[in-house]
Image (cartoon, rainbow, N blue to C red):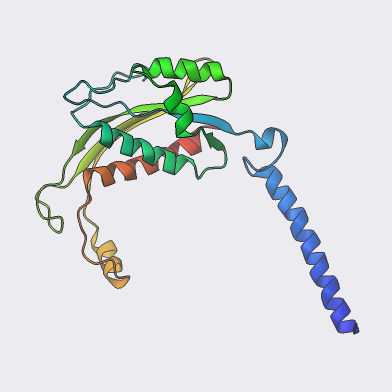
Length: 218
């Protein structure tokens, strides 16, 4: 092996060693990736969102606040619940219990389900809440007469002592793009600014809720 090639191999080896050491340090400092206390994750069970329909719906007897809910549907509530799964599962500091585990303890009482989850011993907290309202879009989606809206409430409750670790309430309407965003959208081929549906508004709220939860719950 020539000397220039030996020098190149030595430099590459040193870089790999430094990178490995850096990864080790990074793994110790990033939540959920290291060992010991640094690797501690919070195990969360996501309960189905409460809702109200013609049959009575599913009340939230676990929520720390009294919920006033407009009529929606079980399917809509389960869909918005799925948005919480989608958003939370991407964060390494949280272990989301499989939906099958939650379904195995469900009955007509969310508080009863939480108690059965506590008895398992492997769940730290439950995420509960309610789909308070879905306001449908009216008219042509390209120029709606009334834009859609949604109201969602959620709370994270520690099972060991019932402490509310976090809670949030979002009630928003869809908004048209600003002039600048509309111009950028046309440049990148997004087409016209179509008004979102109520469920799409709710999904955006859930994404921001989870971002807030991740920032506040340590």
